[in-house]
Image 1 (cartoon, helix red, strand yellow):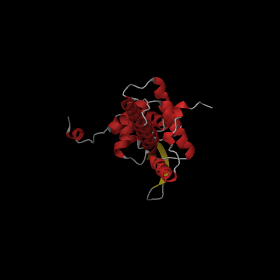
Image 2 (tube, one colour; image 1 turned 180 degrees about the horizontal axis):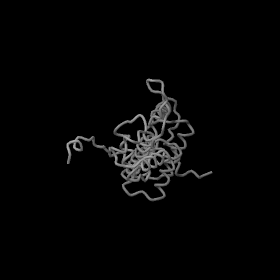
Image 3 (cartoon, one colour; image 1 turned 45 degrees about the vertical axis):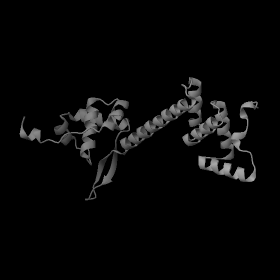
Image 4 (cartoon, one colour; image 1 turned 90 degrees about the vertical axis):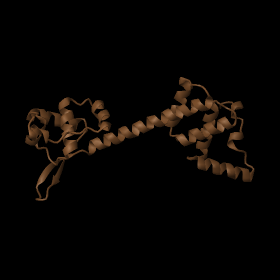
Length: 210
């Protein structure tokens, strides 16, 4: 191996990009071109320079570049250089947005997994598929994890392991406009001072649905 080849810069692949590459079904050429831009932060699409580094043909480079743009991984942004000349600059912001979306989705999945595990721990049993769907529906309807776990805690405190009971607590809190457990606790403290019945003292299990 020649000394010149040994001194060539390596293309590095961060592990968090693997999910993006798999999700959008990158071809080998697309992956190489993307990594080239990721590592070199090139301002313009210099096909001749890329040919020397990646050993791809001009046709392969342009085809891969167009595919990456269609997959919303990168873009071309018209800018002016120091000499006032307009150039097409490589814009990696689209892939940054994709990475952020992946990160948020992964965090959401982790949080959901944790909340289901908490219910199973408190109920001392595996939750049923129906119970799973009910908890998922609460999250989809905008109930925060904090409120859901707060309602679960209230139910356990009252000796109830029933999602119908927790559901009524949540919707009663929603009607009152509570967004956090701090607001719930403030209401409870005010209730004690003004002799207003606590929401969780109501026997909702004996109520009939309207």
